[in-house]
Image (tube, rainbow, N blue to C red; front, side, top):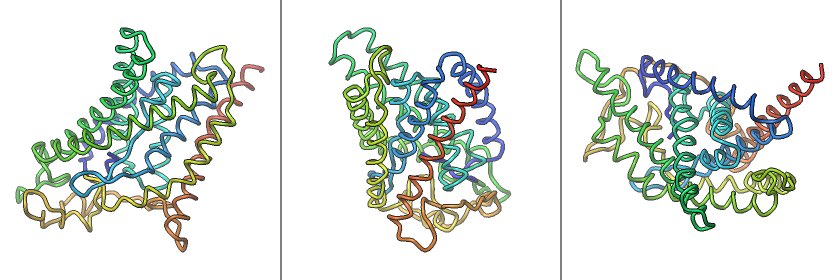
Amino acid sequence: MHIPDNYLSPVTCAVMAAAAIPVLAVSIKKVKEEVTNAKMPLLGIGAAFSFLTMMFNVPLPGGTTGHAVGGTLIAILLGPYSACISVAVALLVQALLFGDGGVLALGANIFNMAIVLPFVGYFIYKLIKDRVKSKKGEYAAIAIGSYLGINIAALCAAIEFGIQPLLFKNAAGQPMYSPYPLSVSIPAMLIPHLLVAGVVEVLFTVFIIVFIKKVSPGTIYEGAKKKTKAIYGLIAALICLTPLGLLAAGTAWGEWGADEIQNVTSGGGALGYVPQGMQNGFSLKALMPDYSVSGLPDFVGYILSAVVGVAIMIILFKVISNLRKEKQLN
């Protein structure tokens, strides 16, 4: 679901960034007001969970790959505004350091995965949980909220892809950016997410929430004991398991490189050309592209990438927490 650069026009990227920035601004304000210094590092843990979740690629129908995001999970644990910030930070690190998702398309990716996904997932979760007051009702709310959250986010991405050939064509009538219309992009994105990626999102969300309730209930419930050592242990285990994401063969739909897209088959035939905007578009050379390290085996690069990404996020929010403490003391 990470939209690369040059799949969306600069105009679309600007519009999506303009839509995302006010929500991010409100979320930052809410986090400043509502999240205590003691809980601020939990946003780093949330960002780490989201980052690691997105490294576990799974095979999807049609020969592509996909992943969970963890947005509803973080929203349930910390609130939707905190989830928005945590997932946005994870997406920023992915784009700048690992080349996963475009820099110019960051606004669109944040809108889909850091805004639509956690807010929709959390709203549906609360809607069901507040009406079905039982343990089964709570877990049904978690499952339905996380499932619908990621699928509605996928629908948004599909629409963003699909409107490109309607709006932006060259003199020869060829699409300049994403070449597939809504009739192709919507089923191509939604069917795999409805069948597989949404289920993976549910399983991941339920597993982590059950784990945290057992080992560190204070993360969820005020007044209960908070034990972060077990949570860090789970993060370490997930880091070690991330190479499993390499087993899924294929490229995620809509994330092909310029050297791949002309050979992508749709409707029985290959595209046969590279859209003009992709040929001449923006490109940023990532430090660890596709979670790899030059000269090292893929699985080692994947683990090192996971360690670096998680460390950045956890340290970032701990630094923010410490700066807030110092500011309050002064």
